[in-house]
Image 1 (cartoon, rainbow, N blue to C red):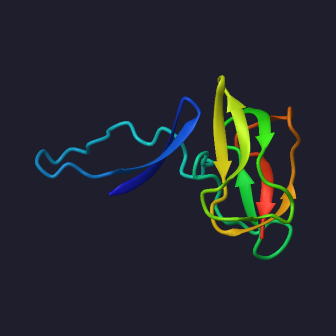
Image 2 (image 1 turned 45 degrees about the vertical axis):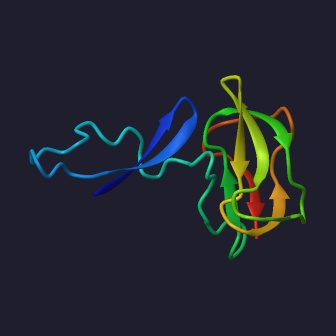
Length: 124
């Protein structure tokens, strides 16, 4: 089995591809479509030390504009809670907390243009 991260229309998907047993040929011959280090959108970011031990980066999964900020500094959030709403390709994409924590910083403002992988907020 191989794991890939694929971005389709601004949505990031984690895909597991199994080798074909009956024909001996791989199921997906042209994978990966994106590097394994690609940022994640809906399931947001991965825990990474940034600015201090134990801080978690919440990153943009696609380039776009900050549409709405759902959480505030000091607010406790659960895994999967929307922290920021990103507008990309006329869609509103929630950027969610990758795990339970407290919002340590919001690094963007409504209307800011951001690139894929940009740090939008940090949790502790």
